[in-house]
Image (cartoon, rainbow, N blue to C red; front, top):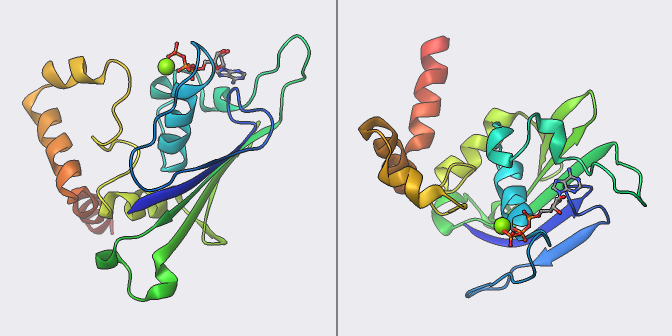
Length: 181
Ligand code: ATP
Ligand code: MG
């Protein structure tokens, strides 16, 4: 899976709609402290289903919504859309190659997801990205402090990281699902 575009509206410091095209090859994001580099990475994790506000550096999930400044009022919602191209292995035909997932959160109303224009559950989104060996907890997304966390991880946690890297964590989600039925 290759991420092609990221759109943010009211997400953290990105109060005005912002679009980031990600071309093939290496992309570097540079800027002064506090300009929103980490917020961008968090937006990728969030749209892929991140459910822990703590790992988004907030106390509650609504903290991802633009909180306002001295000169700008806060917003009522935040929305992130990720556009990606699936790998050949996980697409049945050409139409399935293009993937667009949107997550939106409204104050007091929680999160809702859409995938290629259809309402989907958080679980469906988690599966899409888990099967593609990416996703909110993918080892491909290395946030500040993560290296230290890997070194001091318990064996069970390290195994989980390896399974996510191998792209088999989607199987665990499905097994848990089957056991509940
Ligand atoms: P560094 O180089 O220090 O790592 P950075 O470019 O990674 O900086 P971020 O941590 O992404 O910067 O951005 C932090 C900025 O985002 C802060 O100015 C913070 O006030 C702002 N911010 C975070 N959440 C919100 C929010 N909900 N509403 C408004 N602004 C927010
Ligand atoms: Mg940062």
